Image (tube, rainbow, N blue to C red; front, top):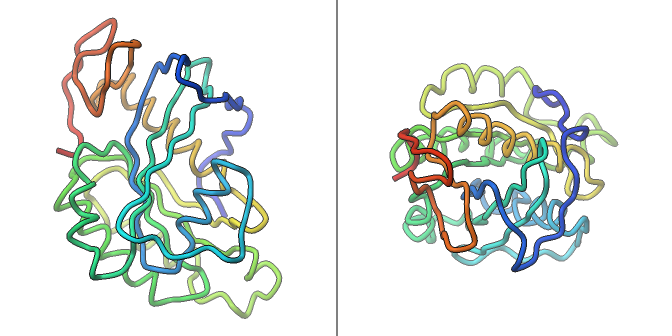
Length: 230
């Protein structure tokens, strides 16, 4: 299960609207093999819903969610990328200026986990020092039928220990179907991003109504210099 302390007690839902002020805006990309459930996880996070008839993403889809974290208004701009090889070049172009990356694999399909290393290599090549979170999807299936599990937590821990590019803040086993750990995963990534900004480790995206920031280095109250995906 999760290797990060639950953040539910830190987060209060905040409805997004055009007039809402965002203290922090972060660009997050969601990557992983086709069919692992990236879009379903995003739908559960944003809308709290699940559909059995989710179609594969073609190219890249954009979504966002605004919420409060530690009294600050956070907006995540989330780019849901296609996992098919033929869209690889297209999706790689969206890595630019990312602050965080969620890498997804399917707990019931070992092959998708083996390919996580390839996705991490892309992060190293195109992003560098970003915050990385790994999620194993379809936890509801192995919870009901443990024999379906093909990826152990120990395997994930080993992978994380060998990956030095970027900052892997942890991993979650999630279920878009019943909601297990979905909110915790996204909120923990936001928490890690906010903390890195406060420690002047990545570019601050603190906004005014007149700013449109994807990694701008000039916040409202101070100048920060740090690494991001460029």
